[in-house]
Amino acid sequence: MESLLRKVQTYITETDSKSSDSSGYSLINKDISDYLSTLTSLLSSK
Image (cartoon, rainbow, N blue to C red; front, side):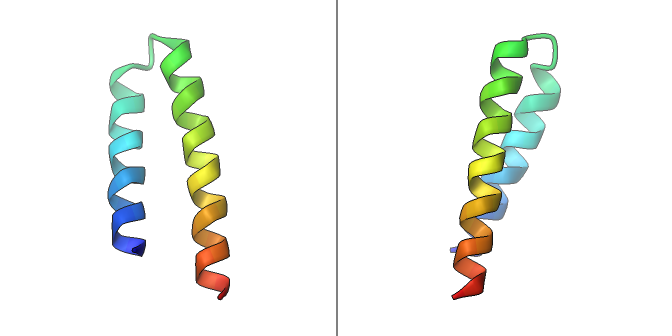
């Protein structure tokens, strides 16, 4: 499960750097990153 989250976070980071000129995508990716980091911390605390 955690490896899947890491893959998604890596994908988001790569996509974010490619679409840095488009603030809309960057904002969406940031929201997803925040959500994923929260989810990951919740999962790891169990």
